[in-house]
Image (cartoon, rainbow, N blue to C red; front, side, top):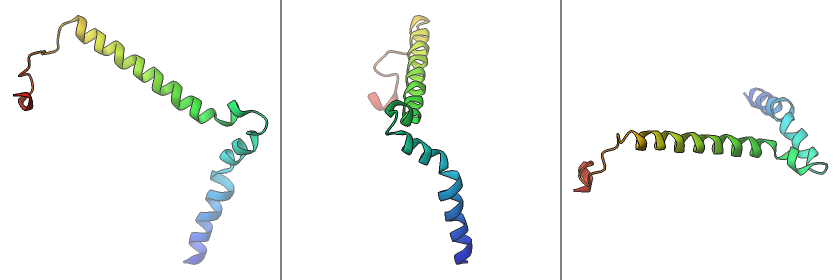
Length: 76
């Protein structure tokens, strides 16, 4: 059983994490490229935020939202 778990450790350390090791070694040359995953996540989050705001504006323009104080049972 020990060999099985050592095999899993070898797989992750030597193969699956190789791209992350390459990004870590790239940090000394280019900080922006080394943090490419962070930039991608920030861009995706920003685009999702813009889409969400657009959808909220669409529903607001169509006046589909119930704005009464009793629209939700927990409000009174």
